[in-house]
Length: 343
Image (cartoon, rainbow, N blue to C red):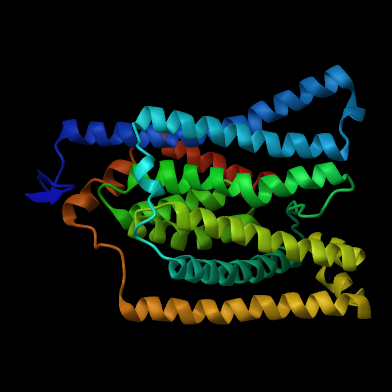
């Protein structure tokens, strides 16, 4: 017998407990299915309806931004509400001011920005390898729009509302629902689905790498606030860098956005050198700082709790029999690794 969450249980769960655990896992998977369905199927249906009603000229920079920001807001909000209701989650304890300091957020931001840079290099290497074999995936459009109002809405979502909603869903609903028996399992699972929900391998790499420290700090501090602040800072800093490069060297930016590194290198002008050097120095500085922070954390040995045999028996063996999660990963596999190469 072992104790899990102050409850004495047998190492191997009996059939009734397995069914109860599997049901909960399936409910978490169902929330992700609903999120994916709204973001992909419902959004495409709405786009068809709007085009039928107003014509293709309906899509201006402004309406495109409204739609591209509105659908994730709808998908994430509905998923969060359903998750809280179905799983009977209490989010109030996650907004505690205790358990973390400004230093916690500073370390988390440093580590996350460093991982953001590492993810960008990994994605660039993968793009180059795919290009060698004649494969080209859909690129992520991070460019500013011509409409001022559209830009303001896009930046409000990308730099503020989006990070809040994503943290509530992935470090809130998903992480908190899966951590009861095995915290390490919950950390890596929540990071994986956070990366895959972006639906392109470039951001999937970033989401997974950054999702791990965000989840670790959320569990250690007992608060989701550090993760929210870090996510906001991370997206804002990335947006500032993109805008600076786009407005100072638009041709260079567009070629980099499309993955054409060789052409982009030929377009480096004296005017573009200042933002390039500054952004490079900023990213390399954070990578070095992130390496130092990571080493310190590892040396201190502040790792998550080692899962017990009872905890292990209640995660993977039951999880792999949860049908909703097979649907989740099949959908993500198609959206991340098939659809981008067939559009």
